[in-house]
Length: 201
Length: 383
Image 1 (cartoon, chains in turn purple, red):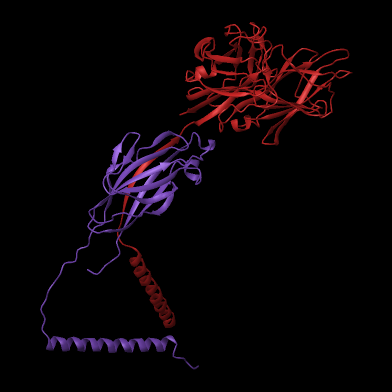
Image 2: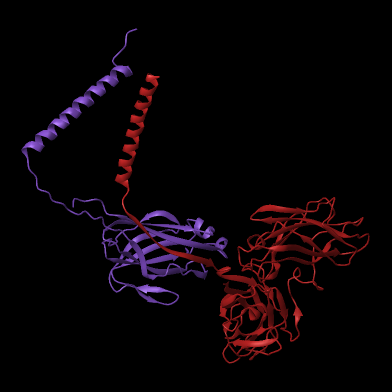
């Protein structure tokens, strides 16, 4: 029976032959350099950085609100600190509700969220909390339904060692009808920072 | 045997290569991440959202003569005042009385123990029998429940003795359905010669988590003749129906025993925060007031029998008119009605008089007042 080159026996022999030749060449090479070159040695330390996203000292997101009605808004401030040694490339916000109700599942008439950033720390009054900005305000998240995953946050500083001063505004639209009376939702906020893209160092 | 080993080596290479590729790609997408959290944040809405709810005056007393006469809606209270069907009516005619109820309650609330209360009797006479009825319940233009039939009455009274029949209407599950509910009653008289039927009460009762309520009718359609005739409660809407006082109003100055007195169903839930209350009074003179005279009024509010405040006075009327054709539409803020008790026990007296004088040669004509609409608007919420 005729055997083709693709059979395992032939292929194995070829691979074995190439391996033997390669090893011999490598050994030969080493012998050549060992014989005709000299070397100096040097070393360098490569240390990895840290990425740390923290909140505070201002963080009012844990303060809820009761007896809200259609057209009401609630403002809560939070500071995001880029505490590590590596710049943050981007930050996303994921919100979830548990327990949940139509307040967070009704994406039209239910609760909405918007996030602003002040270039300096917000000046707080209240409760009920309200905030004024002594610097400039930029939009971080435009008004949208409260619950969402991986919402992109815009206009953040993101630089290692800096802090972004955010104001989260939760509102119940004026269009909210009687079906949204006497409901309760508990909302959690998670900010996720991802390191900047790799660069030549 | 050798062949099998070689195959294993080959597949191992493939698997290893795939794993290496996966690790490389994952490394490209990974990187450092860090999380910061906020909350949990509990957000709770009001039990009843802020809103304005309007209730027509249902209990009306005319003291234009100096003595109160009960001119209340015949369907609203068990008393001597009854509404008699326009036509004698026997069974199996499919002729009806249709009643529409007020929309005084805050919307979106669950209703428990809803009842339709119907008090009726035969008008009596030779060969009269008993009065019976069945009914259906309508909301949003659709029939949502049927109770009884000609073969199995929802209830009957005996002879001319008024009897109240209260029937559960579980299909009225919320105040959204209770508000503006329509009940179409098919009554019949069992006598060998059918008679008319006297209806004393037609109300809707029930409870929410915050209050019990009685809803009164604001419109009746009498189709017992086969030709439906619509009769709104005269104070409920601005329309062609109105109430004209029995007597003329006094000359020159109001008299404290001569007034129109009105109250409405208690509709504000316990614990609510009352933010505003106002009275709407759509009225005119019964005829043009001649010779420069005007018909004027001021009003007084009561918490039951306790006076709360006056709006206007004999020296400074709240409003005047000389027109016998054009209605004035007055809105009277009632800031003194600032809690649930006062709201639910609100009584209003309107004192009318002719200014500067009426009667006699060369003087303005003495007139009555005509009221097209008298209602109270309550703004409130419940935390």
